[in-house]
Image 1 (cartoon, rainbow, N blue to C red):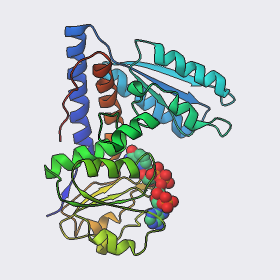
Image 2 (tube, rainbow, N blue to C red; image 1 turned 90 degrees about the horizontal axis):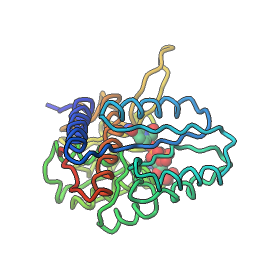
Image 3 (cartoon, protein in one colour; image 1 turned 120 degrees about the vertical axis):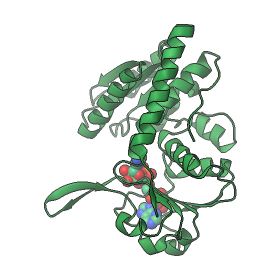
Length: 294
Ligand code: NDP
């Protein structure tokens, strides 16, 4: 029988661990981890994400600093804010909500974040560290995926893993993490030939494409573990709902385990942001890294 991987329960477990660890840091070291989130402009979806991040940060006992700037903010002003956050000892994690308005140079802004406070793991420094097997801040969504895989499968050594999608925020870091877990990794993308055949070879299949239901049931190896990162809003019969990149109804007949959408990878992302903020606080303060499930 196919196991449904419950991202809601798993992420709640991580948030409880974070809150417990934060309480310990306060008691023993007088430390309060702080996360600064920078939002430029009035994109409604970004506004909702930022609000949720703030609520969950405070619920975990951490300090939340929200910086909301007008859409017309200049590069200079934004870089100066980041410089201030880099130097602020109360801030251990800095996240710039993407996308930024088009007149801003997002790459330059992200790379201005001090690598040790880069809780999204998007700076060149952290990308390079992850790629060379050094201690890095790891992007939240792939980190959540690998935690769930380790929890489900234990040692991932020797597994054939296929990642569909090669974005900088999901596909590429996911592939690096699976390689670090000793998987044999294939990265597929829009130019890959015979995607169905590539997917059928996967013991672990990670879909991060952004196309509703693109991965069909007969592309999945019987017993495979399927992680569906996709979040796509579709309208059916006048009603809107979220679906993943995998045809869930068909895949659930074949896979050994699968993450649902919603309720799979999605809730793990903010939980891993909190986990990364706590990790950053420990590293900056010279304390050991916290331990995570999986
Ligand atoms: P991007 O658009 O940046 O990347 C999509 C990737 O999919 C690209 O590498 C692209 O290939 C590949 N692709 C597109 N069409 C095909 C195709 N027909 N066959 C094979 N590969 C294809 O998306 P993201 O990585 O940012 O996000 C992917 C999905 O994950 C989205 O649905 C997004 O909403 C979701 N997401 C979910 C998160 C969560 O918290 N659960 C967090 C982040 C993203 P190419 O490079 O050749 O163009």
